[in-house]
Picture (tube, rainbow, N blue to C red):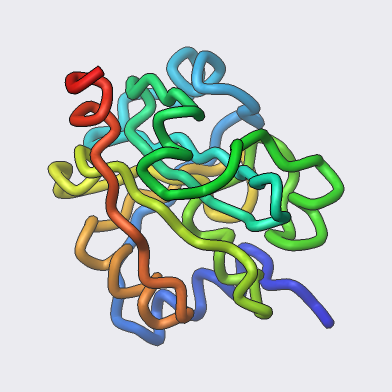
Length: 170
């Protein structure tokens, strides 16, 4: 089975009449790299964490880059057993990307429906989100409502959680 690549992703977005803007930049692996090298891109900047729970359930948690993600809080909100980062091998085999290229777009490669996509509530407050399009040397800006439409189309409707609500109640 061939996994979708950047070209296939862009073709699918075009077929859905989703307008995006993509900029090229040096490869980025971390949020710090992104802040330093991405240039002046408007909109919210997403960070994505590929996680697994103790029962081998997989989660793609997407939040604004400035959001502090407490994995214990996320596990509680998702009613999942202890969350930890999935391995690089799992990332490649399930989402078809390398570290630094994880984004909600990578759900396109989860053809077996093993991954639950989770969006942090504040992400939805941005009109435009910036995400890596299956590679970490580009950033694609997409309207938030179009990202939701894309996720529905690939059969990965996201769960929405509010990480700050849980933190505030502790």
